[in-house]
Length: 485
Ligand SMILES: [Fe+2]
Figure (cartoon, rainbow, N blue to C red):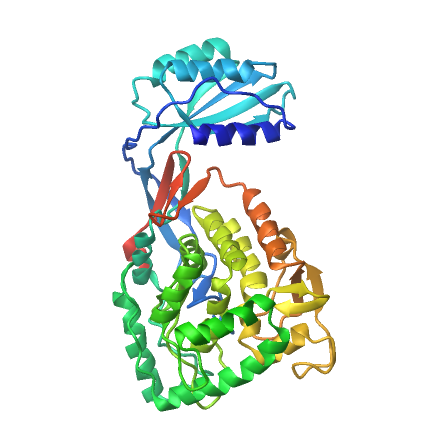
């Protein structure tokens, strides 16, 4: 009943605020839609490493994926066209109610042919074989211009439960220990072996497990300490207030200190209590789609190894300094957590083009986002919060800053603009997007996500860490052998 009520409220807004009313609402029933196989192609549009893009690395796809399909879902979709007149929708909904059909979604739009004709898409719990369907369609056709059963929508596969994310572990694009020749640890066999040992945690991790603790060496703690003290100095000046308020809590509850590397397990527990977010170890590169999909379940992939000790203030990729100093504290902020969650939900079943745009929005916000506080630009993006040089370059009103005499370009945070902005991955960003506040950033992101052309809606169920969809879908499953190429 509540679902129908919300649908009508939404419908009324689209009709300029007029209430169109509804005749009845009934108990929603659930049953499965039978399976059928279909084929399609889907291309991953980028790669993320650990908690985000691999800095300095390409995010182009390594191997194309071809997919096979399987029908899933418990929704039947109907469309009908009616003339816009008082009571018209009520008449149609009454027909549905008389056949015992309780709707889970209603959407309307004017037809191209006439602004007096409206097309409606409605969904209900059931199957195409539902015995109520044929008589209901017969009645509908007698009272509408046209009424028909809609085919299930084909979309790229996406997880519907948090534990589905376990499947991503088998889809990482390398073992996480293969370093590029210019990596500071490339020639250090001991360092490479150490990383290999640490990423093993991720390959066996399953949803609900406690993240294994890593016994960090004195050398690793020393590297962390150098980065920690340097970053704390700069984040005190240039981080958003939420970050500065949360860091003392991380120190108190998660073991953040110059002489101690905090454990992902403790951070994950703390974040879960704050906003429902959890960390999850990652063994290698994830596609942008998989990485963003996990955010829909308030799950953030995080590495557990640290950069090479020979260059403590440099890393070509995300390491624990980036994850734990840059990302983790912000996930304790409710607005930021909701912001990230919105991107994640929007990515479920999104087209490759939309994934590309969402990933770019992620880049200019979760990684390099700025927002105004008391007339000054402050950073909330992890790429800035974990890089003292770029943090100063992006936020300081003075020059030189971050070793540079020039200023970047600042643009107001408009996701539709950010979504198509080009960016480098190995240098300071030439363009930053600045939100009016963290809340403003979140609301604009939500508006952008709501405007995406995805042909279905999702709803997150926090108590079961799952999502439900509002119409029948065909989630196109990647072929395992193609992922292993
Ligand atoms: Fe990141």
